Image (tube, rainbow, N blue to C red; front, side, top):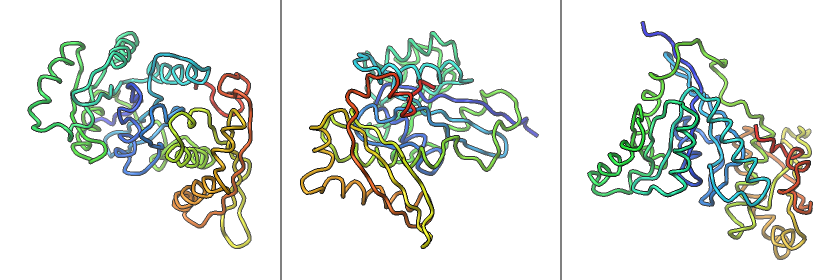
Length: 298
């Protein structure tokens, strides 16, 4: 009988390579929010993959990026770096046939941390014919002694099942670190705020989502069995508030409808969602505001 293995695997990479999509694909459920916009993931998200022979604590991290223009960016980079330093194993996620200077900086962070690393070549489905991947993989293999290399497509679920086996065999022999029924260390309150922020990110113009955060004020059960949720969308300027609300409240209504559909699935019953938009000047550069909103550089 094989010894049980368990440990932490940090999913690291530059913004927008598909780390959150990969986490969701591995868990076969949505845990991390996803959008086409870089830096959508702001927090450390733990997802637990349980099998009879192993338990992998997958840690989705904000994309490591340069140009820390805001205090929020610094906190996000610190969160990713801490997760990398604390991991037993690193899954370095890159985009097939694309290796940028930002990818190189992430690889240098991995080398500095001294953790064993598995190379995950995502979006491999876009490469036709597949043989074009070989020179790309050979070039990356020459840059670092990766212990495994797994090409896959998180979006298409192509070869995703190969990754847990490649990761698990390099984890320490250990009993499970978490109860087998646990999926994440994040609360429903946190996931509720993230779902609302995802819907905002998907609907708003390019720059605005980076000046937005969501705070849950209350979650209560109603007499009719529905879950009543009150949330505040914080922006940095009055002009942003007008954009989020939209003409005749149309944008806020659309965001609320989209969020409510997903919240119904999260809670397993109907939800009643009320959204308010408030201004906190330059919250993304305020240490006190970042702490209050849960951005503590975990």
